[in-house]
Length: 118
Image (cartoon, rainbow, N blue to C red; front, side, top):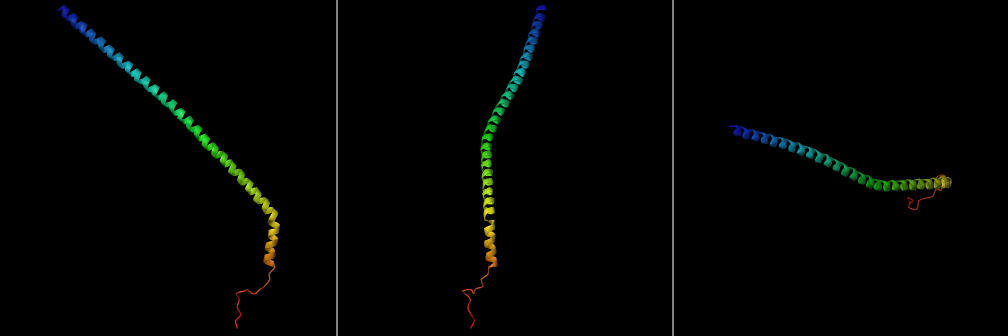
C-alpha cells in the first residue's frame, strides 16, 4: 500500500508541477500579448506622426504657393489702384471742364426728324 500511496503522491506532485507550468505559460502569454500590444501602439504612433509630417509638408507646399499667389495678387491690386488714382488726379480737371461745357453750352437746334405741321 505504501507503493500505491507513493504513486498517488507522485501523480499529485506531477499534476501540481503541470498546473504550475500551465500558470507560468499563461503569465508569459499574457506578458507577450501586452508587449505585442504596446509595440503595435508604438508602431501606430510612429506611422501616424510620419503621415502627419508628410501632410504638413504637402500642406505647406500648397498653402505656401497660395500664399505667394495671394501676395502677388495683393501687389497687383495695389499697383492698379495706384495707377487709377494717379490717372484720376491727372484727368479730373479736364473731365470736369468737358462735362460742364457740355451741360452749360446749349445750342438749340431743330431735330432732323422734326416735321412741321402744315
